[in-house]
Image 1: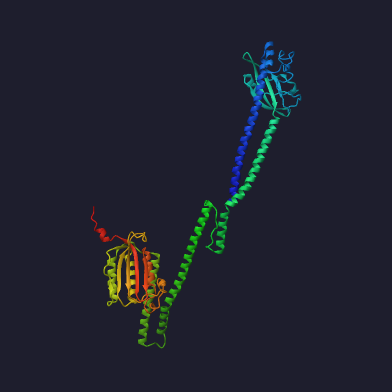
Image 2: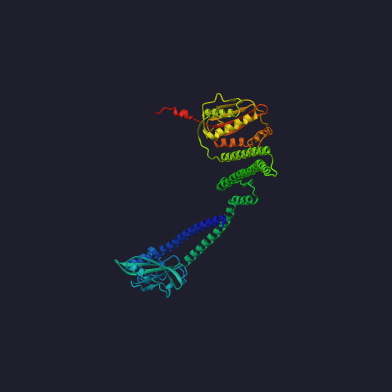
Length: 511
């Protein structure tokens, strides 16, 4: 069942229950109003008749009609001296017909046993009934009202006790047909039922249309999702121009989710492309030493055997290629660990001693080169000491390879109040050489795996040094940038978060 149908059904059921409750209350109010009116009319007539039956002398009998009804309505020779029933009922309406459905009243006098004593002429042979509960009430001096069916006619009967000198001597029963009232109430009930049904059906149709309009954006979202799944086009968006209600927020959230998915998909696609390129580059780099080793092994097995001098050269060549393979695999492992940010600690590192130590190691590789590490700041950064040392070795080694001039290492700190640095103060470690520089075309690609510029191809290496350095720095929440101009050299800058130096913390005297 669709949400549109569920909402429409729920709305229609609530409306139907509301209409049923309202119709029931209206019908009940009308029923009570009609019944109360009829009971009041019968009670008034019964009290009058009971009063007439209580008159015991001529003076009272003559005075009662004069006070209540016109004198000509009461023939003096028959009533009330005989204390019987008047030939014409004492009501403004005088209807000659004797049918129970007519608008008239029927009078009956009964004794304490419930037996009829007198009856009005319009009753004919019919007898007004009185239940056992009604008889008990009348005997106790209380009026009683009940309904009964007499000769297929629904009557409302009021029984009023006649009390003389504190004793109940008889009871007056006055009845009136409820046929008109029943017809009115039945008609009212049918109209209410039919009207409620028509309103409910109409409301269902209107609710179906309105729910379709309200849920149309959701339908468009569904269609968009289906189209994206079929076409794999994450650039599509839900077109929504309505108010910013729940449905509007859903459309906005769905579009934002599509944007995130599109970005993630592009990242995954780019990562897969890089992975394919990486595999291709690794295969290319590994193929050369492996091919060399395979060829040299073939030379060693050749018959007749090669000379001793050639054998020594081949063995030296194989050792060199094996070392190259080991370095390549080691660099690849280091790069993978750096990109996965594994085995890296986060602790305060004193920058000055670390740079001086790396400078001494690099000077041993090329004693004739000038490596300047003067004026270093006594600051500390947050990172992994071994990883940072490896980055410095890679950058200094690159500087030595690409220039015959001096290499200068400097440090600086950023301003904590600098709006461009909201994360806090940083320490910048710069390594500057005086080499030929990097061309503008090659500068954006220097951090790609296995990439080597034209001038770098004559040097040793496989093009993994700078990618490893960048990955290690970023794993320590830092950045690595390289600026270069052709003919003026290059500057590699490492930026890491600054922290208080361990030495300064230890110098704090206890409180």
